Picture 1 (tube, rainbow, N blue to C red):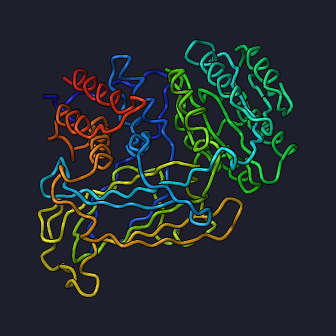
Picture 2: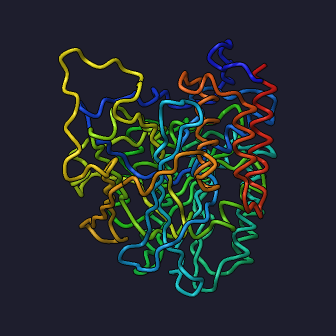
Picture 3: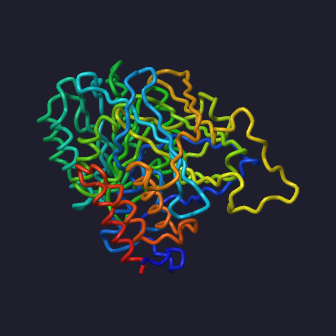
Length: 482
């Protein structure tokens, strides 16, 4: 049985790796704050970063762990929408929490429609590649080149790719072209050396996309870097403002992080979240293939922009709740209806899941009730409902959002973990794993072995072996935590 991470001495962070410091979401009383609002997140960087640490025989720093990115790393078999006007379907479920006998887990999942190969719009991409000295090494530029070569081989005749590189300065290496051989030859010829003018590289890449902007195409910059910007514009806030301006011009952003010991995860998160962007971390050639080939449509082709979730809990049924993860995606309640507020973008075929730990009304929660407090209303007209889920989204290129509403009722509840589906139970196992790695007190009593067993029992169909790999990573963490 693994000991709690909270009882261990903190793992020293490697020199140079930088992660944003974020406090975990607190437990909230429904009578005081009944509404929870956050933006969708399809990033998966945290899962691969954590995997790299574990494979190197080290527990990751708590700051490297973003639970929602771990849960959303895995493909889930969910019914996908078929209508481009409402491009995703929603599924909710309630089951017992595996780490707290007094609580339940409420899972919310959406699955975006998958565009058929013939329906995918053409790509107008500019690869902006960090070739500074810090990128020298098999786990950096060599891995980027291998991944991008693999990606280039799958391009269609209607797709165009340009290449910008940067070290001490930025340079256009290749004007946008559909010639695969020319693209691959340019990638093959790259080598690392010099300082890191990342801001200049981004500017040059966006300029190149704009010069070749194609209506009806996916206009996107793909940045491959370890994030070590040390020349020119290096301020994360200024860079975030810059990419936010570019998104207003219809240009999306994807970031591929690489490297160990010099990773600036904080910078990559800041600019990805502001620039109609998504962030991934590539630690192996297999991960590069997953992001850029197997999941290319969800990585590159958006079907919904500015996706926001809002959950209103019914105090007659729920006394407390805690959103697990999404700390960097929190929104104010009023942001939900404000179409000027940026949120997450969801690609073709992508799945997004959020998990709440909830305490049923009348149950023993984390917070003592107030002596003179309001206990909550009687059940009333909506007594069958735990919560109301609202989802706002925009169709790509449109400025006005659309709304989906869906109550969460007793019909969505199962009374035992065994009754829950494989997806729900596996998501619960991943959420427990992420929290335990981060040292969360909420899962301190749940052993690593119990998490592995929960995941193993929910493995289901696993054609690519992602779930089997996860179970091994849980067991690796167990050994390192002893």
